[in-house]
Amino acid sequence: MKLSVTTVEILIRLLAAVLISGLIGYDREQKNHPAGIRTHILVCVGACVIAMIQQEIGFQALAFAKAQPQFAGVIRADEARLIAQVVSGIGFLGAGTIVVTHRAVTGLTTAASLWATAGLGLAVGMGYYRIAGLSALVVLAVLALLKKVIRVHPAFKRVEIQYTDKAATRALIQTYFAEKKIKIERVSFKAAWVDDEEIYTNVYTIELPHDLSYAQLVDDLSAADQMRQVRLINV
Image 1: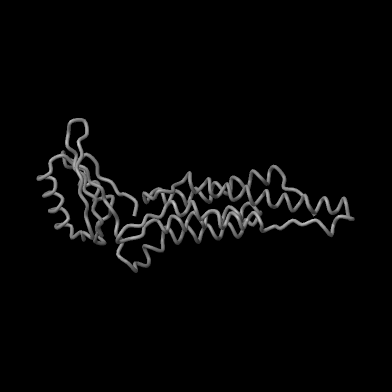
Image 2: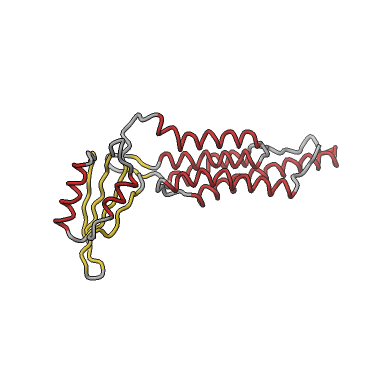
């Protein structure tokens, strides 16, 4: 029975944690969520490191008990103590991705993905590669595929549009939304002076028809000369 984790095993576990969490973080970053690749990787690697530390503590306790049998009855090494702190402690990071407004709560999926990523890091750190690998596939499938298969609620997203010519641009946007049958849930407006130029900003919460993608919407609206920026923002 081995009583330590080898350097090669440590490197393999850390690389596995980076790979698994990087895939999940890539999905979140592609969808413009606040926690992207780096955040997910750091969460997973951190959890992996803590799991390996906990495992080493257990190994040291066993080695000491083997070398000093007279103290075997008083040595305690709780394998779950540090791991439990990761599971509860990751909540503060996930809470930072949740945004509550008067009509919606956003960021819950990203918070859940961070929590799941921490769990994957713990599995990798403890050397449970099958659990980590299969679980990562399930998490990726839920994030990337489930929403396309099951559409229970309208997929509302927020689009921020910055422009200069107020009257013409607002008319252009309204015409485009009407032609494309885009449903507007709510909208907010603001204006600010930037470099001696008045910039208007509209934030629309919208739902697109099935035959129109958000990438196409951004591309279409960005073509107008008076547009300064068109982008999706976190929902």
